Length: 395
Ligand code: ADP
Picture 1 (cartoon, rainbow, N blue to C red):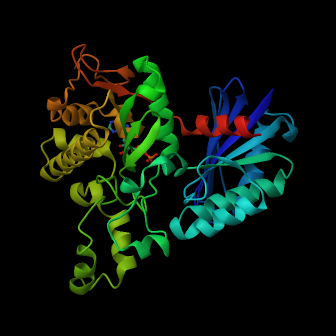
Picture 2 (spheres, rainbow, N blue to C red):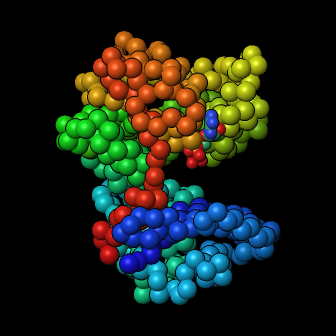
């Protein structure tokens, strides 16, 4: 009997989920927001209960202290010794980490060195790791990398067609992201299809605020839409996805508000995608309300998103030379009947057809018609569970 915490530490937030392992029961979960700012918000959910408090939390060490105090205060655990493992999501593992790993001083130093590839994320992930090591030094901690699942991509997929020296000297290549999610749903898809994982080809579409599409052949990622950074791929909530890179110097030259490349990248990351076109919001629910009301900008944003998703899915049919299933997952993929319907409608030539009676709110599993040669699956992702399982496997 052991309890494992899965941690997802961002620069100003820390999300966590506590599991009873090996039963995989979720005992509690929570989020600490606005770390380092005034009025940080601490939310804990356990059983039917939800507790919220507002206080000033200076850094990740204090956040972890409060998280652990909350666990005992609410009677979720009686002693810290019940926690036998901590799993940390780490965004960039570069070419070093092909699997999850037990964190020692060297691993932690490598995670910090890889910050060049994920400047917003890896330092926050490392801060979360250090905070737990400070407070629970004896507990096994495991790093689970967003990029690890994609390290099986062949060189033709991960290399960019730019001079070799940019890869050899500067490590510029495709790393991908959301790997834990694509890993999880591709395995669940094989179960639903009732086929051995090695024989299954699936296209997994993680469509949330961030969006990535992956081609999975025999359980291995062979191509994915995110690139050197998570800015690449279809348009997303606030990210542009793929654009002509020549737009960047053009905007620096012509828009007085944009002084340098960092300014443009900031716009491409935070003010583009669905938000940039719909303007009203980056949240798909608001955009769908606008679409149904006939609002032109929301309609364009919806149609552009569908178009970009279709083009990436089409590419991966080519990469895989056919597929058994398309999997929808994450906030939009799991919940938006409209996006699923519109995307699949335009891909009927590939042998996919949705059953409208199955494509309803709360749908899970196979939503395609019995004639559909390529199955359309809705699979809720569970990245925290993968993290907790990896802690069990490695500790
Ligand atoms: P993140 O990448 O931040 O983890 P999520 O996977 O939670 O994001 O996805 C958030 C997106 O899911 C938002 O655009 C939200 O509007 C969308 N979403 C959630 N529920 C619905 C719904 N019922 N219909 C349409 N979109 C939804």
